[in-house]
Image 1 (cartoon, helix red, strand yellow):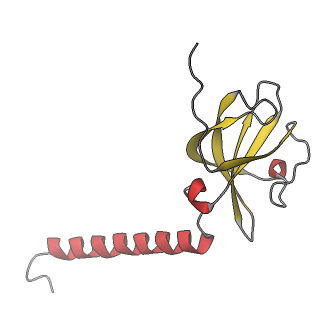
Image 2 (cartoon, one colour; image 1 turned 90 degrees about the horizontal axis):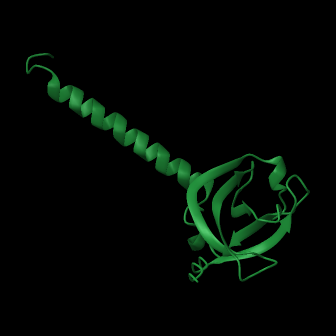
Length: 128
């Protein structure tokens, strides 16, 4: 008999529901939102049967005032289980929208400046 994989630390179960059933995820109904995948999976214990282990995806839901990072997956009983990070560190990627925007803007500006410097370096000496 093989050992179950360890549960990913830093995540807590917040409940089970059927697909499409109204569910409160920090004040947001996830079924009415677009889920953005974070390309990460975690291992969780089934909320109703803790000896079972399941690998679920980590997602974020973006609303006008905030982003909510969560993990969710369909369990063998066809119910969906939802999990929230215990801290922003557990979510790895939960940062305020303005920080992401500032980092994106800084990266884009660096790219434009780099391309301009490269273009200047390729001009003949007596171009100007």
